[in-house]
Length: 197
Image (cartoon, rainbow, N blue to C red):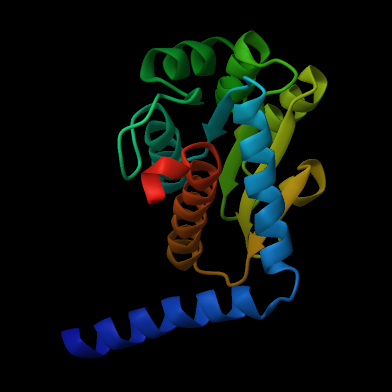
């Protein structure tokens, strides 16, 4: 049986390896820069960010939105962001239409051209996130997918798919949260440079 110290060493090494593999792709920084450019353009043009995911990815989607409506490092005005899927909406729509429609119905009701949808899915095959991307496309919204493994179906649906290598959901999610934090920092440095002096 592995000792606690061995598990710590192995798990942290796996996290480091996943980040290393991601950075080894020469297109990584270009793709991530496109992500920040899309978010900056959305905010500068008065659009809103919508986020969605399932399980731990939903928690990361919520974290992304609250960092914009709340604050990241320092005080500044709120930015328009909403994590889709509040409890009453989820139970209503899943009961009346099916669980795969929970995010798409909110995109239908709230989304508009100029808004940005960011979906998180380690498999890329979450049906409710796929439906949300289809609804966003019909609304003329831009889409970014934070994915893992081979990117799944969402890779072909997103305007900008960002695929984290590896097959372990926890390692993929750890890198997704790094991407979320960095894209917020890039956004803030552009729109609120006074917060970084």
